[in-house]
Length: 248
Length: 242
Image (cartoon, rainbow over all chains, first blue to last red):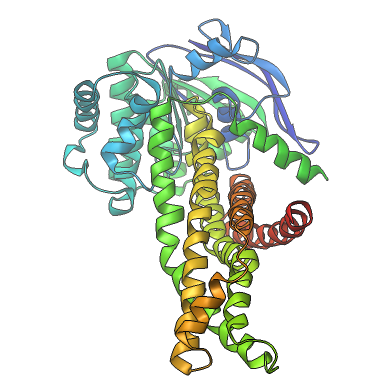
């Protein structure tokens, strides 16, 4: 379980996150939604240690990420898998090398063990045939799937996904969502997804947090979200003409 | 001043918690190929022509009947060893290698590849930058020795083919009054310049933020700052070691 308490962050005096607190449970897909510039990505970066919050704590199964010794912090990092918005694949490495990279760097497994694990992860995301290709030779959706394979190769306890559907067609987007959901349930991972894709919200959002101008305005499950009375969330949800018509 | 302070803090992080030695060895070999081997062609072209032009222009200016013609070769040799091979070659390398390093790291930064390394708990600056700096410090002296040889050879070709100096005079001139210490001095310079080019360019690339425009700016700044630092270091080294 991940617990965030009173997270505050400001850049050049401008408050980006204002006292955000929440709990994200194991084996659930937790979504953080909100419009552009509301602080979703900053919150994610605070949680994975790329941006240090000005105030507040992030607890990984009770271990305070920002108030622990370096070894504990390092071991928490090694329990994380992160899927970045653009995939963040290393351009100079093949798909296979990208997925194997954390194993090469962080484990002392034999070559055979690593190959077996990489093959399993690539097969899990349906990309075993693309193992020898370079990131520049594969599509956006495939890059995301390679990113997922790399994120799960170390058997993470926590999976973070920053807008996994951005730039993808609706069908590929659904496939990516399903894959993340399956992996979350299969390996009982605590998954946190940053998104503003309404389809993801309705399909896989087991626990949803809505951010607006750096503050948490709503939190709940996807079955309740359409019944919300929070005007900002209603505006966000029904900004789409189709959804407005469905609501009517 | 704050940028200089940030640069020194950045240098400190290179020697922070590192990875397995085998990882560094593999990275070092990759960088030696990327920085050193891939620069051989440009260094060869530039050095040969600079040597050739030095020979012809020295001969053009050296018209006194009391100065032996073999002095042309002596001047070409000393110019190559003391200044042209180490400094001009490194300025050329600042353009090629420096811009390459800054744009590579800048692109890695804006496409979140560096973030991906950091999230994994890898010391990204040490993993990405240290091998580049060491590779530059190792390969630049080799390239400069190669450059000096080709420069002197270029002078020989230009001098003998155009008839401004005979082969015998040239060979006599390049052996006349030779000071072996100058070779040591020639090798110290690229060692220092290699460090400056690789570290400054890495610093510029590593802290890029924004998009493609900023990567271009970082690359330009890397080359400009590297060239300025080379010229300052060149003067200081000459003052200290000669």
